[in-house]
Image 1 (cartoon, rainbow, N blue to C red):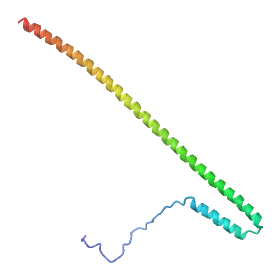
Image 2 (image 1 turned 90 degrees about the horizontal axis):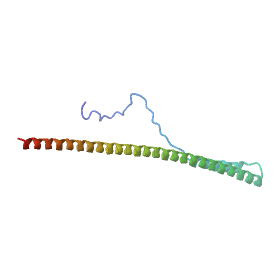
Image 3 (image 1 turned 135 degrees about the vertical axis):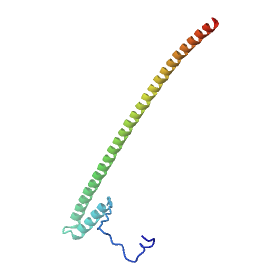
Image 4 (image 1 turned 180 degrees about the vertical axis):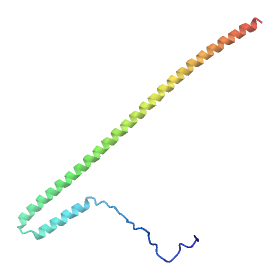
Amino acid sequence: MDEYEWYDDEPYIAEEPYVIVQRQSAGIGPLFLGLALGAGVALLLAPQSGEETRRRFARSARRAQDAAQDIVEDLSGSVAEKLDRARDAIEEKLEATLDAVDDKKRRMTNAVGVGRAAAREARGELEARIAENKAAYRNI
């Protein structure tokens, strides 16, 4: 393929169709916007008196407030739960790590003790051989 072959004037045509998916989370803003628009339309189209409309609107506002508080409580409860689970998992891993460190420390201490005992024994054997060789040398 030539270096400039891909510089042609024809548009690129894909051999197979493809789809581009774009995700977007709505959040809580559209909920409040919908509540406000619904309340405004209800006020404009209400067949009852102003006092009755105000009572109904206040009742609807209280329900919306209660619903929003329920959502906030659910979210805060689930966040608190996740934090508790994460903290517990971290504590378990930390405890396991500390146990492993203690085990390694105990093994190293035992190995050093065994090494010192072996060195003492080897030193004793070496001193005994030296003493025997000195005695044999003096007898010659």
